[in-house]
Length: 115
Length: 114
Image (cartoon, rainbow over all chains, first blue to last red; front, top):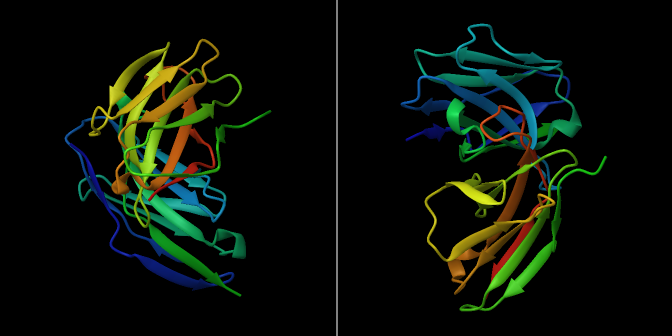
């Protein structure tokens, strides 16, 4: 079984500043993927960044980067140069490599970017 | 290039009724998954369809059933609706079963059960 925990229900950040969202997970799988998804008010779930657990190098996508600590089962998301369009719910998620579409989501963190 | 489309956008039903939600996958995708997102929570996996068969299922009762058509579109059916079935239902598509192609989500159907 897999579980994903996000301990920060709400966060805020000033525009152009940096913010880090926390996530911890638990899984019995040896090979798995970790994700951060963004859900704006439009409700569409958008993939922000993906990390293969077997890769030690932290994934980056433009202003978004992760800090993947496999032994600690921690997977935090750093957003640099925050923009107003980053305001959304952010979900940390995990899926086993053998059941890729069976994604387990955390409860989410509501991020507000303040002008 | 059309993304994942879901219909209807909103739906109101009464307890005990049955409902059908529809999903058209992104062009080129052949696998469809359904998720239930209760208010204030993360989505929960319901099931996945590939080659017109249910391949994986989450912890949902048999009242939740689905279908995939030859054109890869899919339906989610819920029988004997309960108040607790009120949620946003998300459809996601991908290419290739057990492949690691990214999931693409639709905008969801908001179901309210009164």
